Length: 320
Image 1 (cartoon, rainbow, N blue to C red):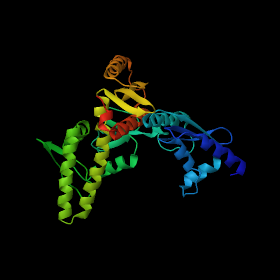
Image 2 (tube, rainbow, N blue to C red; image 1 turned 120 degrees about the vertical axis):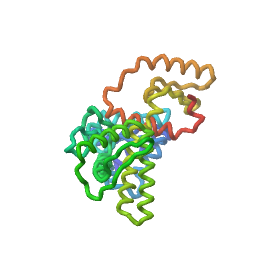
Image 3 (cartoon, helix red, strand yellow; image 1 turned 180 degrees about the horizontal axis):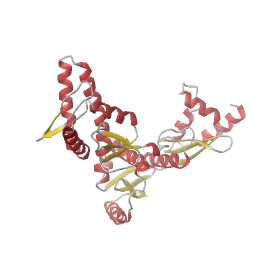
Image 4 (cartoon, rainbow, N blue to C red; image 1 turned 90 degrees about the horizontal axis):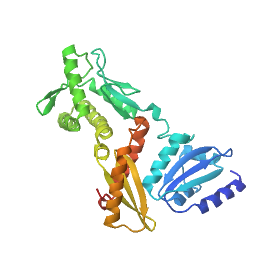
């Protein structure tokens, strides 16, 4: 990179404040080639131009950077949400995550006894679950479950048989297996019960030196844990109202969240209980105007961000 360009970028970096926000890397034509976020913009952007080792993809990107823009936000939560929004809108060349949500897919419990029982579909259908992003995990799950059938619920537990080689199921066994799969994916308590039984089987097989079977159970547990997280971990986020209080510069910011979306947010230099109650009541009034998310594939990324950020907050920042 030419010295003149480096000097220009160095000046830009020195002007960036040490605050939360997003940054945009632009090439010589003004095209935005990368969008990132940070809790400290100055430190993060400056790291691109140090001599420390970097990933090959980052090294390639740096070669094309001709200018830098940034937007300051009050909180890291808002920076992450804004980053996600801009990536989906702009689709910068060097961004990979959250850009191609059209590729997200659903796990479908099939009707045909000639199938493997589960399949991947690109759009929501009857008896489908998702959306999911990590296709290899779901493909592995489908493959592993061909060794474990029929899965049948008996009282508060599940009975199943391990088959070293996949075998075709009889129509009767397929129907029982299908009904159980629908139950497991629809009910988080049933899914957790099934996972617990698989853990018992894994330890039993390992104790008997059946390591191949134990490995299959282990991998199946990991895949089902991914399913559980994506299908059920957001329930407490999407089925109740949440009030957040996050400290910001010279004050605090309140967020009213309903149905997994930010309905209202506002900065306050000083917070009193009266102010909090008024804000909460206003958020409760506004949530009635919410309309369903038109694109659940794109929405899953925003929910992921909200969920992970709320999980990371201290308990005293979550008021309701």
